[in-house]
Each structure stands twice: as C-alpha cells, then as structure tokens.
Length: 381
Image 1 (cartoon, rainbow, N blue to C red):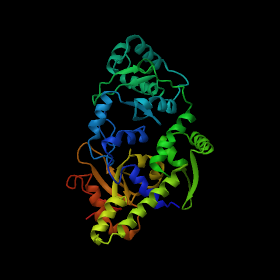
Image 2: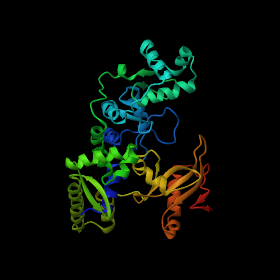
Image 3: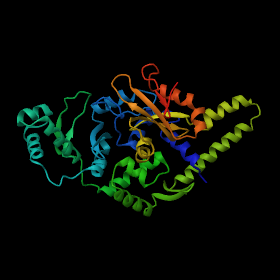
Image 4: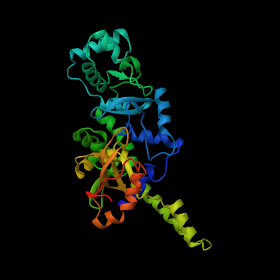
C-alpha cells in the first residue's frame, strides 16, 4: 500500500526537485512538462527555463534550441505564452486551438497582408496599413491563439517577425486530433510527474474546461490507462501500472537499506550518510518555487484560494515536499520588495523553522537589498 509520503517522495524525484536533472534527461523532462512557460518574473523575450530542476544553464541551452526552432513559442491555455518542441506542435495545437467564431476587419486585413507580402514585424504592419500598434497587437494575439499566425522568437529582441502558420508549418495537421483525443495523449505525461492527481489539478495545469477534462479522464479510465484510488481519504487517479511500480521501487529501497544494516563493518555514522545519500530520496526541507513551476501550476487554483494578500505572490514555499506558504511583495527590475512570508504551519512550527525558512528565501533574494519586512504578519526583527 502506497502512502501520501511515498507520493511526495517520488514526485520530488521525478520532477528533479530532490536531485538535479542532467543534460541527458533534460529534454524528456521538458517534454513531460510541456507546454513550458518562461519563469513568471522575467524580462519579455526570455526563453523558458526550469530553475531548481537543473544545475546547468538551461537558459542558454533553450536559447539555442529556440534559435534553431527546436522549441516553438505559442499561446496555450487562456492565451498564456509557453513553448513546445516542434514535434509536439501538432498535439498542443489541436488541444489549444481557439477557433474564431468571426474574424474582425483588422484580422482579415492582417491575414491578407501576410499572405500577399510575406512575414513582417508589427512596425511594418503599422506602416503598410496605417493601423495603430494598440489595435494590431491584440488582433495578432487572437490569430495566434487560433493558430492562424506564428510569432517567431529566435532571440530576446522585441522586433519579432509574424508569419502565416500554414505556410510556415505545412506539415502540421491541426485537425488530426479533436481536443479530447489530444488531452488524452497529454495527461499521461502529467501523471508521470505528478503521480497522484484529480480533475481540479488538471484544470489548474492545462487551463481547460472541466467538462473536457472529465470527458478525457472518463475515456482514459475505460481504456485502463488510468485507475481510481483513494489515498488517505482523497479520491484521485494514478497511471494503471503506477501503484505496482511504486511498491516495487519502495521494496527495492527497503531491501537495499536492510542489506546495509546487515553489514556490520559499516560504522553507524557512515551507514546513516550512505542511506541518506544513496538509498532514500532526500526531500529538501524548504524550496521557493516560482509561479510558473510545474508543481505550482498543478496546484494553482488551490494556492490562489489558500493564500490571500494585498501584495503579489512572488514565490510559493514548498516545505517538506508540500505547499505551506507564500512569499509576497513586489517584483521590480532592481531590488525586489519582500513584504511578508505567509505560512499555514502550526504556530510552534512557524517559529521553530523561522531561520530555516528565511535562509531559503535569502537563497533566492539578496539579504541586504531585499530584506524580509514581516514574518507571518508580524514585523521581522
């Protein structure tokens, strides 16, 4: 029988939050987390990145992939900017394509312009049409959500070209899957990383209607891709073979631990070190996860409901593998302002772990430039 503690342990392991992903496995992680947005607080034009999951510079790595069009920019789920691999463009295009019920005169003019004149930036569109940028930009964004145009993003520059999607990607068939079929292909990837989940988490992550999610889940259950389990009173889903795989891995770890215990020549201190390092996946006690992190996106609706503040949520606090707080303040291109750390721990634990939590915050923010003003509503000394 697997436990909630097991779920947390293996979540952290598979998402590479308890150890860093290496270059050989990075592309697989990116694929399973797709569509991958940029970090929440970043400059416009930045490539996607997975901080805390990697110990190499994936910013530069993804800049190169983007420049080669190995990863492509698009609008997925409520118009949010994110990236997918070229191989995944068809899948997520089918899933997120937002059909236009009617095309405005501005959108028609822009489509005709790109068809007749070829790719161009917004500045040239303005010059050739006489339209204002404030009218051109939202019209392009709607066309982008409909996968009628493609916004090129080869670097961090703001002067980006716009193309007709069909002429740029003639091999892509946006009718290959209906939305339910596309979602059924995406969910097992999510499930592999999150392990145990429910409908609400899928809605938060994919930003899709709950009706569509329930339809896809129902079919995946019928097809024996997923199974329902009750875990500590909560109903959710696992991949069909997941429970046995986790139990086998847990048993393997226990057997290896017992084997070490039987080796009398190991000193107790060395044994503990070996167990901590090589056998058990060590869960970092406190992590700050940015708002576009995979795990935050899966719990986005719940987190928004749980933590209320007049300030912006800067980072969410993952404590012992579960969300228990948020760092709030103001993001600035300069020293950020940390107004408060809001926690839902027991009062005694809040105080006992104050130093540990604040130290984790100062691993992300500069202690001198961005001091913590308050700790759980009280002035921080």
